[in-house]
Image 1 (cartoon, chains in turn brown, green, purple, blue):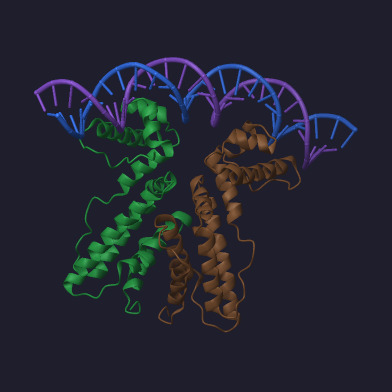
Image 2: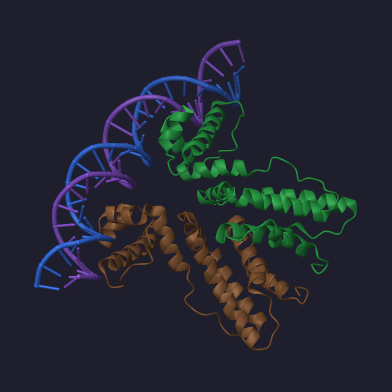
Length: 190
Length: 190
DNA sequence: TCACCTAACGCAAAGAGTTAGCTTTAGCGG
DNA sequence: CCGCTAAAGCTAACTCTTTGCGTTAGGTGA
């Protein structure tokens, strides 16, 4: 009942076309009028489908927004190579904070968490971050650097950033991200 | 326009009575039928007010739920005294995780984050945790123990717990909470 | 204490969003 | 090429949401 959304049987079928045009319509209308003004009938009209199609496939506006948000939160580029683990991770964390702490980013995170009864979408977001960190750490290991574990970076860099983005949006800056990275790379964190 | 909700001018006025009965109605109906089935007109009827009163004061169901959630997330007891910082903080973290990671707890957290345009409710939740940690740390300092800063505990204990509760609900247990506490109290964290 | 004044609530009707039954079509499998 | 099924279209009933206006509670100043 809960819509597979991103897992269509055929990439070229009608379902896929409907999903694509609905997602596009959501992005366009949010960009134009903001999400406050977004309604299902509006999306349906822009996408060229009937409202009942959207209600049947996504259930409600929240789940549709969650679906769209996860796609937007997927990182499109691999983390850059700056020659060392410290600079790679610092750069990644700064970019992560920058993207996620913007009003748009926060809105996407909240949407992703929101219409997500089974936690699948939220887990996907976390998996994206873990992948990126894995890549950075693997590259560093390839250079012969000693690296913390992925979980340690998630606990001590990603989690504090995300916690503050969600619960205390004030006073966040890239210096804070840098502090977290240097702390997790300090030899103390055996 | 955004409803002060918890800050009524007078505790005994009509506004306060309406708020109390509406909050009570929400809690009762969620307990009875689950939040999926909850609607504003339903709450209004149970509370003995008209729907327009609720719409005017809270805007929509999400903001009302957020409001109720924050009240439920307020800790009602001070952190226990177990004789040492390690045991106080461990005990607090275990209890925090236990309450927050339950389906009910996660739902409240999500509700609090959800209908919260200005971030005020989320900030309140974070403030509750900070207060409790402050109390634990102050007591330890009174004993002469060396303590990390409140912010360090938030970054390295509360944030990882909350991150996993929200984004990766699987595989959370009190051992993980204990590990976080011992790590933040290790002398390495100068 | 009393009369005023404002903010909040009740009421009701209009407007918008949501749901559901039934029909039609696209696209896969035989 | 012909059925078969899942998904989409259509439409009507239903519920929720919004809004204007009148009323009331309760705070305020004389």
